[in-house]
Image 1: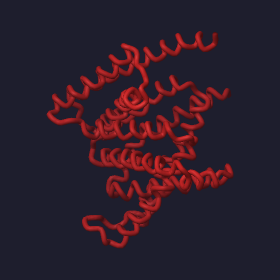
Image 2: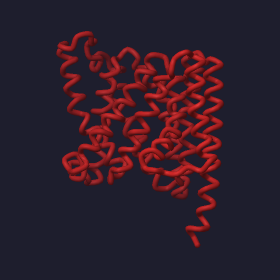
Image 3: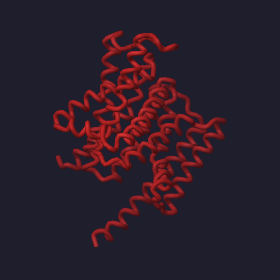
Image 4: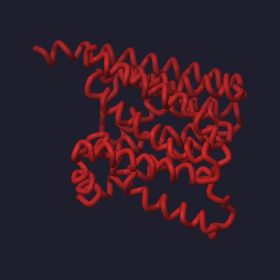
Length: 301
């Protein structure tokens, strides 16, 4: 099996894991969001420590969280934590349709941020695709009478997370390990306070309350860390355009989970907005591939 094929199947595994993750977090519906988030952080760090220890890179992790990039890593950690929290809440509250919409919008938000923050230039066709996606969100807001705040929060936090990550000179595994390392003290403090019952309005700890639930909370670290490791593996072997196209398997599976598994309602406004966003994605992807093909002969010449 070639390296490209291995990378391809690694990326498929990543997208399927993320796309079906609503089923996993739905099973944790009785656990407070912040407790799920805390366990996801702690157990993913445990797995990253094992991986980095095997690679003899624990010293690099310490340098990352104590070095000059610690502030940016902390900002990235807060953004990704907010993204995780909104996603888990959306699943538990029955808004998986909105979460899938958010991850469809995210790549186009990332493009918009690239133009605003990094002064990246778009072709007219790519600009048209971004405008079409924005029109879809505005139409959905008008049709439903309320903005799709969950979708926008997921897309925006993920987009800003990408902006911060772009300036970090760290590999994906090390940078994510550093993020969860900085979040872990907060996660531990939250669990201690929740367990002590000093936080008003919080339920008792679910961890340890049953073997099945405890296993799921520990396993949340696995489904956080492993896809990120596989994503890093795929990124070194598969073209970015291919990975970009494959990413849409994630929100597509989320949408199917929402409709087929959870029976969430999909209004005509949702369907119109989804159709517009899918069209925008197709237009932008086709324009990007065409642009890359034109640039290839020039680079080789």
